[in-house]
Amino acid sequence: MKKLLSILAAACFGAVAFAGNTSFMSNVYGRDFRMLNGKWNAIVDLYDQGIRMEVYKNLKPQKNEEFYEYSFDGGLRLDVPGDWNSQAPELKYYEGTVWYARHFDASPEAGRRQFLYFGAVSSRCRVYLNGSLLVSHEGGFTPFQAEVTDLLADGDNFLVVEVSNRRSADAVPALAFDWWNYGGITRDVMLVTVPDLYINDYFIRLDKNDPALVHADISLSDEVSAEVRIDIPELKVSETVMTAPDGTASVSFRAKKLKRWAPDEPKLYEVSVSCGDDSVAEMIGFRSMDVDGTRILVNGKPVFMRCVSFHEEIPQRCGRAFSEADAVMLLSEAKALGVNMIRLAHYPQNEYTVRLAEKMGILLWQEIPVWQAIDFTDESTREKAAGMLSDMIMRDRNRCAVGFWGVANETKPSDARNAFLRHLLETGKAIDDTRLYTAAFDLAYYEPGSGCFEMHDSFISELDVVAVNKYMGWYAPWPVDPSEAVWNVAPGQPLIISEFGGEALYGQSGDADAAFSWSEEYQERLYRDNIEMFSHIPNLAGVSPWILFDFRSPYRFHPQNQSDWNRKGLVSDRGYRKKAWYLMHEYYMKKKNEN
Ligand code: GCB
Image 1 (cartoon, rainbow, N blue to C red):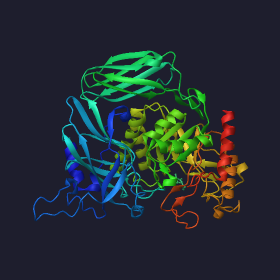
Image 2 (image 1 turned 90 degrees about the vertical axis):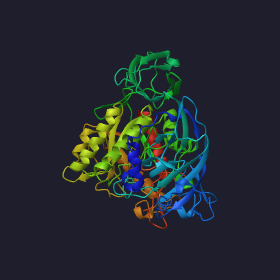
Image 3 (image 1 turned 120 degrees about the horizontal axis):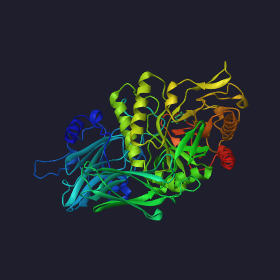
Image 4 (image 1 turned 45 degrees about the vertical axis):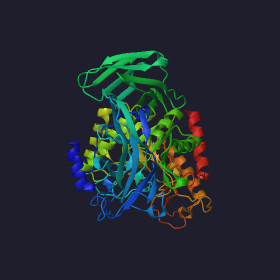
């Protein structure tokens, strides 16, 4: 099957290269691995000729009459991980194919299996090892792996990755989206070594109702019965269980002294899972997420979500974030604002960010890039989205910081949309029913008849938490004074204002009444008005300004005020806090004290 997919993929880059539901091992950073990051050689292939020329074979002339019109040596060098757009001026707007290549040494090891693991490649790729196609993948924000145990040469190996970031109507996201279309090998590349029989995946979490009961599901690499052990030394837990002949096992155990993870006390435990020669460990926390009427409960207690969003981007570098140091920068600035939650916009972000947020006590909303105009009628698009959702969940379902899985942003009601989103909810819940499922909508409007903001989208009743993006004072003029802006949206359900805000160019002073001033004063006033409105939303369970940092977006054309930047950041592209930041900070401090 894999081979057939590869042949089809080779025939047509765009159409069949999708390998959704790729199975990859969980907790790759807890395994025995070697990073293949660093400087790679690269060829820019605007007309997609590399396949015909078989550049992945990396041939060199052997006879007098031979020559090749390519060479990976002596040309462009690109950092991996990293987007190519920020690494060469001529690649800033590039959308097309780039071939990446590098050598690495390997040695087959008896009784051990080896895998190439890619944290993310944006957004489609084919991987070739020693001249042959190994695997293809579509989707720029989720990991994939390929086994290379029997393919590695003893000594030098040559790895080529053909990457394309061309947008397409059947992709997720599709043709237009409000962030930079970064291309490249954007996350870590690893050569992972595991024992012959290894622990492929585990899901260890607290019971939804009983705070001293832990459930664990384990699946081994092979369909065999074997003994698996789970240790949590600090809780004096040491449980063993036999897997069924299909290599899976489930076990539940009590942990009486267990302290739950919460944003103000992010307690984590070292947990290890062992089977035969394999043992994998990491820090895991335990908590519950529920909804009670219009409130969101963490460990049974109502918590108001003081949220913010950021893209996976370092504004000062004009490029993708990829390292732990990047995660420190992004999360420290979020924490400084006073948040207890982050909505990772608009796609699964790297594991460094997710894991550090958990250590810092920040709840997460993670989502897939089902952003506005997706083709809801296309079955292959639906399967791509479902594959991304399950890959995101499989990677992070042991991260207790993740409280919400988001399935879509700003979609319009239709039967096809409903069926698409329902499929996503079913897919997600089948692998993780311990999180709250949500989606952001943008069709809440003021109805003069009722004197309230209302939203008519029947799908929201299928969600645990409803989220609305509403740009009062920016895309939407105020129909009434903010003090009269009463909401009646999703009554009876928790509602998060998942985006609000407006643009301001840092350092620009201007009329606090005029949006076109792009001034900090206008943005500050807009925040003041929105904060006033929040007190008239009876089911408000949280708010999330759009956005923490100015971010790059190619359709923000205004030459003086934007020049390829969306300026809705509370913090400028150079890291300066705008006036509105201080207002939001004050609001969050007040909310924190009320909690
Ligand atoms: C939205 C989108 C977000 C955009 C934002 C904007 O509603 O969800 O991705 O960046 O508006 O700035 O227009």
